[in-house]
Length: 150
Image (cartoon, rainbow, N blue to C red; front, side, top):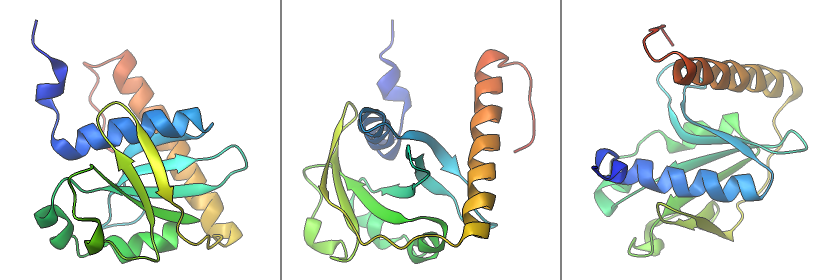
């Protein structure tokens, strides 16, 4: 039987480890959520008190350097984190952002970025989008032959 990890990209493996760790912190998460046209976050997490975190997974220097959108994600979360593996050059990451050290099985929060609470209307909109995204993913898992537009 083939190892399912070989089918995943490095960033997806990091996202899996991040999501596992977040679950241990009582956060639920979704991957590849589109908060607004032209943006797609790697991981969005919803905490037990309604807090919303965005985590961008970067597997290499080139992956990080090519990301020109990350600052636009700040308007869609209370906290923003980078998730990288132990070989990533940490000095590239802005100090004013959160940092998660991850692998495909788990993760550890190294530092929290500043908290900037979302305005109530934006929080409601992104929470509803999160819920719909999660429900669609659950339906796709239950009925993989059913194709629906995201």
